[in-house]
Length: 391
Picture 1: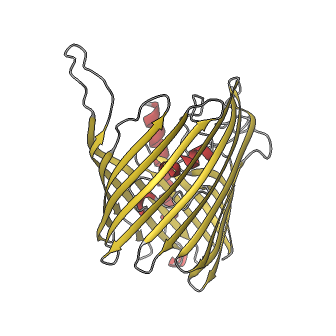
Picture 2: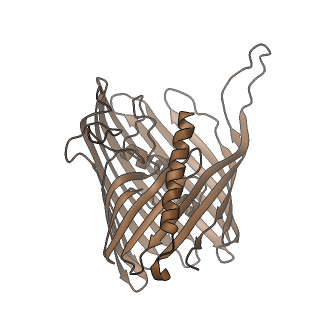
Picture 3: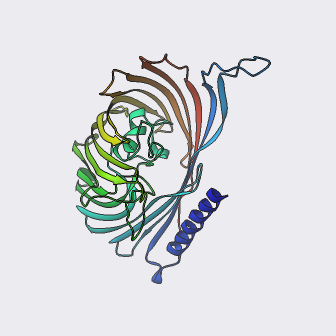
């Protein structure tokens, strides 16, 4: 009941903000849009190796999975002043439980300088900064799934924060800029200073107790991404981040923890004359944490290459991707190496509807346990419901 009450409270607050921002502006000059989308997965067939048996009858447990999921549900309201100088965005996550994802305001000082304050996506790869409804594949690469969580406070080892999810967002201050040659962006940048914990989490003390109760001045998340487009159809991206929190406490009685995280990535996206889109990335990260008298030095890296071939004016696409994700603790010899092969087709019968069918083959190599059978065939039905409120 307590969790339900909390979810209802978040939903009521979010809807109140939406209604307040959606109120008609004087003169009808401010621009307001409602943006929403939903992704429904149909797990047609997923291998689930478990080796379990039913008590008594000793019937072997089913080793397949099939079902329907609300994978992603979003509702957002975007507002822009009549002058175009001030913007605001608030978006809610509707799957699993209701949470505030994005809530920030932006001052457009110049085209080459925009200042945003609030909760927003952190710098990452191009894949990490792309909304789910605009990805070429149903799921992100494994590296793209973990890069934001591991850059912030989530841990792969047992700890008080091992379950913290970032949803690619954090609370802080961001500077963005964009230089264009006509309609083409030649150089863009995105720098962010934030808490370094994750969405909905903050650093506090006695004045405003937070998820992390104490913190040294200057211990934050520092991230930056730069994109360069030397010619039309080719974009290089680079990203760096550092997250430092030494001797922090998770409450007045502790425990006392150390976080020291760093990550770096590079990616390229190019479009060929025949319409093909090629995307490739490489990234690596490291965490050097201290928790409960134990030091954890954990390294991870990943790379991927994908090809998308459109047909019939991009209404139909054939896609293929390979991505690799490797993790290891430097204090031991156990290394986990995961290869993923994804093939799929995308069909857009209507601009607001997209159907995506993927088959994902996973090959995990670990010295301590055998590879699991967990390949999956699944379908994603995506809907978008965006409209202006100014008539």
